[in-house]
Image 1 (cartoon, rainbow, N blue to C red):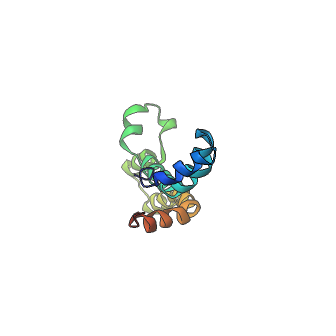
Image 2: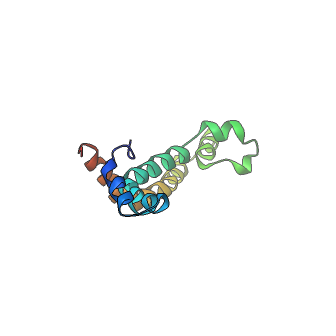
Image 3: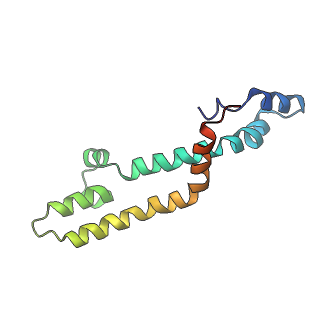
Length: 118
């Protein structure tokens, strides 16, 4: 939907000015689509980072388990320390928080421009 919202007149004007396909894509379309792409990056990264079922199904070696599977396995232990589980959950949020801080400007811009029709 992000690419569909870019007006055709922009690319048409670039063609008239003599720009080729790579230049139009790199200097016109990508900068206009950056908020949507950064939002996609944030949401996809969060989805993959928090995925529990795929690593549980496809990874058989316990040394290769992801953090979400490891936290669940740690919780199944009989002598579970909830303080350690909460510390692990907090540490697992750090990469998502860093990605959000990096993409926050684009994320907000994407939502702000979603209601505007050209």
